[in-house]
Image (cartoon, rainbow, N blue to C red; front, side, top):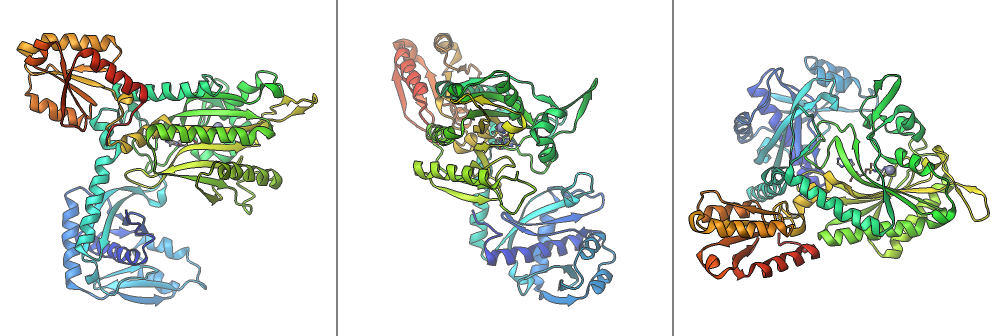
Length: 588
Ligand code: TSB
Ligand code: ZN
């Protein structure tokens, strides 16, 4: 998908189109006041104060029509440079522009504005020569957006759009957008009844429906089994902690803006936990440890709460209540490389099982200059960063380095993936930490009897079950592999009157065999049921007609195939059990 911000030519064109849209809005709503209208990766937007007016679907074509009119009229776009005082005077009726201008440095800044016909806007530019050039555009979406992104401020109206040089390019882009929207996990999640949201529960707090709960349970079982084999010990700990716990860990100082506010119960001050590390540190500290016990790997499917901006919250991908596939690995300094390697191998192993190919490894390092964000121990940082690099080189995986992206406690490896809609997100992560064990005064007894401090690796393979489910729904377009599918087999009698009894027998036998099976005995036409089966992406449909009743067989059709194959029930059961076991991927 094109990146409007990075493509120089498109950037300028889209910026001009933002002005064109603002002009059209001003014509239609003379009271409109404008905040900022930047070009972002996905096109342009403008944040507009329309008083009490809230933009609705039906307003969009009206604005587009007015934009077309202005574009056709073809006014030149003229740049003008003015002093700060002139600017303040020119925009004196617009508190948003006054806010912007007041913050500009009088001596250094040349204040420029651009005019086209009856519309002038404060802007750095550059712009295209004439509004005529903004011909092939489309307004894509709209939403509320708080002024300066702060929920305490007024809600403005944000309208997004895109503009291209040619009609073909615009159409190709719109097609891509509509395909991405089809793949959006929010759409698939609704269609497959994976999750829902409700205002009464709150923003970013999804409710997992029965189908979603099956997928999640399968993911839990899958990763739990892998972790057991690798020597992880799982625990259950509360999803709250006291403020003191998070003061001890340092999160209170470094992570507070991402946390829900404190609540008081009797004399104790609690927070909903944003991370599980402090709890796991205490689990480690519950015992004395010798170097022979290490590595100790404490895992948990742990619920966390984070304050995510309301505009950033998205389906299952970015939530405020999430469940991490978390673990903290306590190791000696000598074990760092080996243990980190095992984590990277586990990530690769899991991605192979799920057929995930489109991802990138990002090695996040500190910014040496930023003494405030990162704890100050250059030697430790240098050695840690070198170790991670060494393992990645050793494994021969491709990665890129990102300076200033490390956590405050150490460098980390993040795996980045691209969702159907919106910017990249981190799925898996593995973070090295020299700091928390010190803060919690953790120790182990070394070979020579001395007391040493362990190093911790924080790691989440799925990231969260929430984000991973979102991603996998998009990867598979909802056609989940058999082992993950909420319904694995749909039994459909051709005619209830003659075939239901036999279909029920098949249904019960499969159920007894622990297959997730549905009996579709609704009085609907077979063709309708077959079509619906495809929409619901059920991997197998069993069609039960007279031939099957007479011969004591079943006829199945696999998702993505038109072929109908007749076998005995035992053969069918065998076949799908093998497929479940192998975790084979379905055709997308
Ligand atoms: C790995 N303390 C570590 C842990 O031990 C930690 O919390 N790391 S994290 O902050 O990077 O979060 C782990 C993973 O959770 C991320 O890699 C990401 O995949 C997922 N995640 C983070 N924020 C959200 C969110 N708002 N919604 C869904 N998933 C999220
Ligand atoms: Zn952690």
